[in-house]
Structure formats: C-alpha cells, structure tokens
Length: 405
Image 1 (tube, rainbow, N blue to C red):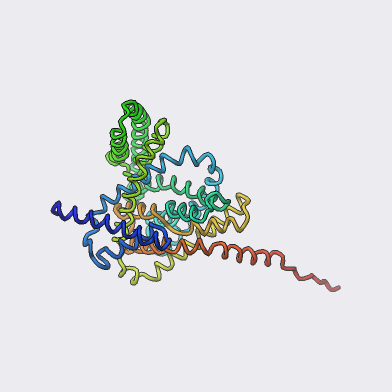
Image 2: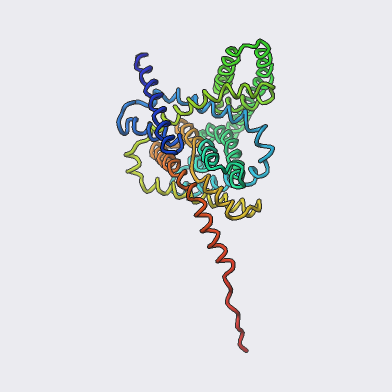
C-alpha cells in the first residue's frame, strides 16, 4: 500500500468523522451514533469509500488507548470514593447476573463455554461516553437516577480490565492443562505488577522533572509518549494495549501534575475515539443484519430487558432506591457501548467470537446506541406507567376468605 493511499484514507476517515459529528449534533443526537452511521455508510458493505477498513483499524484503536488512560486517570480519585458502595452493589450485581444469564443462554444455543462467557461480558457493558452525555444534556447527572447510573458505569469501566485480561486465558480453552493455566495466571500477574511498578515509580518522577523545565511543548510530547509507551510496554509483556493505558492512568493520579496531564490527553482522545467509532461502523455488514435478523433482535431484547430489569431490581432491593429512580437508571444503561466493541475485537482476534456472532454483536450494539436517546427521552413516561401499574397491583384488594361451617 502506497503512502499516498494511506494518507488519502486517513483524510477521508477524518472527513467522515467530522461529517458524522456535525450531522448528529445538528439533529441533537449523540455523536457516537453519528460516527457509527457514517462509518457504516462509507464502509465496504454500502458505498465502499474505504474498501478495506482493517487498514485504518490500528489507527482507530489508539482511541481506545486514550479512553482507557483517561478512565484510569479520572476514576480512582474523583468518583470511586463517592460512588463506591452504590457502584459495587448495583454495578457488581448487574455485571455478574448479566454475564451468568447470557452465558448460560449462549451455551444452550451452541456456543462453547469460553465463547458464552465472552458473550455475557459483551452484553454486560454499557456506553459511558453516550450515557454521560445524555444525562448531562437532560440535566440529570446529579439527580438520583443519574448518580446511580454513573456509579454502575464506573464499575463497568473497571470491569473491562479483568475482562480483557481473561481473553488470552479463555483462548487457551480445554487444550491448556491445569499447570499451564496456573503458569499463565502467574505470568499475567507478574506482568501486571511489573508494568504498574514501572509507571508508578518512574512516571511521577519524570513528570515532576519535566514540569520544572516549564516547557508546555515538552509536557505535551511527554504526555503522548507516556500514554502510548505504557500501552506498548504492556502488550510486549503479554497484556493488552488497553490494560497498559489503564494502569498508566491509575499510576499518574499520584502525581501533582495529573490534572495537567488530563487536560493534555483529553482533546486528542476525543479525535482518535471518533476515528475508532467511525472505523467500527465500517466493519458493519448490512447483509449480516438481514441474514441474522432474528438473532440481532434477540440480542437487542435481551440487552434492553435483562440489563434494565437487573439494575432496577438490584437498586430497589439492595440499595433502597424508589422503583421509579431504579427503572430510570436501568433504562439509561440498557445499551451496549464502546467497551463492547473493544472486547468483541479482542475476542475475535483470539478466536473466541466467530464472524457471524461478531456481526450480530456489532449490529445489535449499533442499533442499541441509536435507540438510546429515544429510550431515555421516553424513560420518565415508562417509569411513571410502570410505577402506576405496581401501585395498582399492590393496592388491589384481596378477596375476603369465607369459611363455611
């Protein structure tokens, strides 16, 4: 492939990303949905403007690296302390129940145990970027349902790390002996410890040294080097790019310059994340949606109904939230999101998710993201109607019991 061809595809990808953002912002719809739709239209399945989206996939995956770094940099200090208990109970219950329920169903549909577990993990993820944006637009981010939804998102964002670590472990499957699996786990833990030690000890000192030089350009360059270097180091040690970026973000929180690092990374992350979603849209095959329409519909129904029901039940029974608040939070999280794509990509490369199921997940996730704004706008009416039905059911008088002698 010539350099001019790669440059043209990069320019085209940037133009498509900008077009999707402009169009969907004007329609007051989420930018993520715009990226996905424009990418699907430009991909080989429709217009074929980019005949081989795999060529831009490597570039697009940089967006995931920056996303995981930002989450690691932001979550442990700012949100976990305030939302820890709520996220642990509601988020932990939602992820665990969803993974188990979907895995059992997928296994009985013919998937292997490892692939069934992966499918459960895919369904358990929601879209942090989309939900936060929609809650902010509706001024619900500080409302009870907003805080509940954000706490569940925090847990899901953290859960992606063990999910990604489990992919190579599950890919060993039945061929790996018990001793081999134990060695893999030990090697993985050692790699985790080494990466965390390097970024925890070395990076804050380097940041302090560079900050004393008072060179904004040098700090910006170091920020980029820090994010990409930590991801590369983790991959070389047998982990994943995303895990390395997340650990680097966690380690950077100990530096007094973490906020400055955050401000340097976030704008660039937005650009490359837009490229990521546009490239994901290019992988969408309309023919697969037609061929597997019943399974895509089943995926959507299970995703929306199961996740909404589990979150509502856990929040009501375990946390004491009102039924209306719990249902509003569940409906807000009823889609699958960006980490579903990340996990599906990793599972497909590891041989745990075949092409038909990959396309089913891709199609169902794109449709769920497109439907989310409409579901959230209708959520108050749905919650009010459900609350009225539950009150009618509870207050319905029981028949008197007559005993004849």
